[in-house]
Image 1 (cartoon, rainbow, N blue to C red):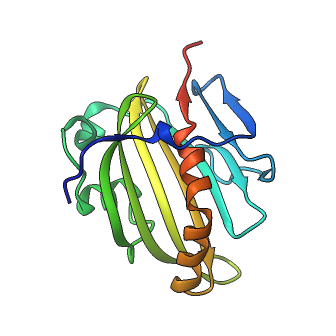
Image 2: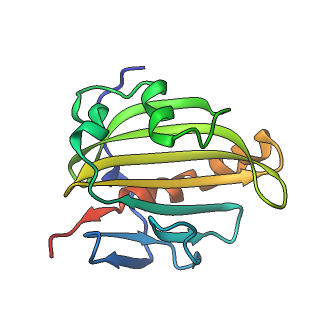
Length: 177
């Protein structure tokens, strides 16, 4: 699935600007969305829509080039590359789309996938778009997803929210402090 590299900046969100000076980035999310308490030590931001969707930004510090060789190769990451990056978190993932993109004019990778997963309360289905890149010695990964009790319901919410989710990812900018 070799597609040309595209910039995510063509879709931009309007709303509230979130800045993380330590991780050197900012992004914008809609003012109708709410900031939530991040779950996990590497999650820098978690925002949720009034619908069944959310976005989070994960930053892993001090990632070496040897830990992420696919990031340095031209082309599109394979499903195996993505599964390695996801660390077995979504073993039943079905890949919908994979492509090379740019986040703030920086080479990145993007994947759209469907996956069921378990929470403490229920089994949930999600359609997620994940964009990731390596910069400043950090791995930056933005995951935006839509969720529902069935795969079809998750896909329907994703299609309804897709422009907003891509706008949030497209608003991501690196900042040098």
